[in-house]
Length: 576
Ligand SMILES: Nc1ncnc2c1ncn2[C@@H]1O[C@H](COP(=O)(O)OP(=O)(O)OP(=O)(O)O)[C@@H](O)[C@H]1O
Image (tube, rainbow, N blue to C red; front, side, top):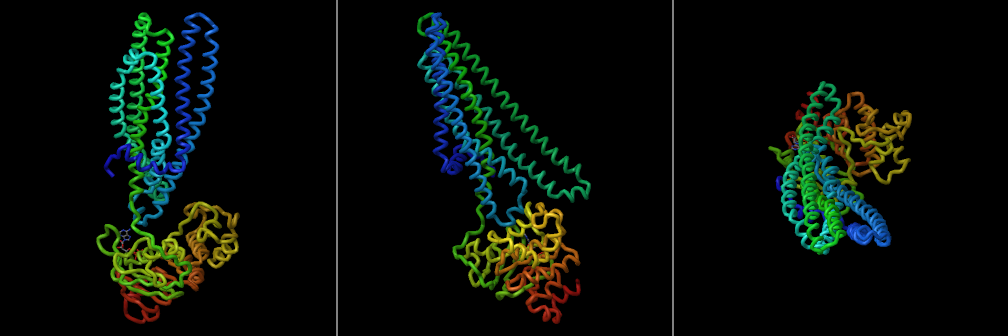
């Protein structure tokens, strides 16, 4: 997304995420505005002390304003505490809401969406970029309002004290605003680079650590380190450039402030001589200018912050605007019988040169075991993706129990189908949790039964912590076959009428694959099963076999009939 968003557009887009917390945001702002008013009042007490006690040399003029000063200082501290706490509270809630929404939106995207993107860059968007948006729309807004009120209070009091001195002090304002604008423009460009580089660095880290075995096996540690270093150096130079700009900005503001304070004091001497202002008034005026420094600088820094937020927002909006290609149906099917049908199904992946499936038709009866085999790239896994409705067919229709999948709610469709893939995907957690992932309502006996049927119970109980053994995201400590048996137990626990097994033995050696035959048979019993496989020992157990070539049905029938005929199935056997 090349277009730079305006701060207004960002605000408009993300303001709805403050819903439910706006009251607290408003209360926080009011408290902080109150604190600013207290500070302005404290300056007026200082003026009184100068005039009534110091200049008059009379201690009796000291006590009252001094006590009032202490009182407002205490009140201001309490207001600042409450205001900052409420601002952080609403900011944190905003973050939680936005991140959850972006995360849920990502979970509605099809697999190829993730295949085309770098996971690390997505992670950076979900973490750092979401943070920058919060710093603008949540806490940034409160800072803006408070700083504006502080400036208004101090400037109002300055005008009340002397409009002549105010005029002298405020001549630097247009110059100041010009400088701020110039700084913000440069920082904006750098911030955009910084956000993109942050995505790059997270992507390199994620990619490199996820592929650590390949990196080590091919001795590519140095290359990976230099890849990170190159991106890190670009980040370093961008950050230094931002630091230089921000670092220059503060002294420029400070100089402007010093010049205006000195101008006021010089002019003040003249005004005192003319009897238009007291010494206390001039000193209070100088104190006001010093107090103005913080909110004015804060306003300038907000521009910088808004620059970072707009670039972060662009990266979040890009994710949120990627409409999921599927619309949810409305029919709820709670317990399907399990008949499946594909009618003249055609499908092409986005940007693929040729279709993955063409005019494919097949019916599967409830409880039937249909094996799908064929050469690599024939379209077998694509059928699995259409059955789970990761994609919709371009032509024709896929139906469960005679209902077009597009009419079913995605949730009810997927609650009727369990998937066991080629590589078992695990979560960091116990073996028990990994099996229970199949069903939110599974009980301990259900898990034990499923593990036993999947031939997993014995190896699990032989582990020192049994079902409580913690396994990593990649099934650390388990063999490929053991991981697949856990996946089968997970599918058993889901207890769905339809089961899709996508090359369950593909990553296993012959011995481990043999050990999986029994569990696979058990999990398939009583369920409509689509078994995608190259393994001809598995297809031999099927009721029917569908041989696919180039997205079309090349042969179709019982394993025995297909083997007897001189067709593609027998050719596959000969090759094996
Ligand atoms: N995400 C994708 N984007 C573009 N083309 C794809 C995508 N996934 C698969 N394809 C293409 O679609 C065709 C069918 O792929 P599919 O994965 O269904 O084949 P398969 O029969 O399961 O192969 P294998 O046995 O190697 O797993 C192939 O030509 C493949 O290159």
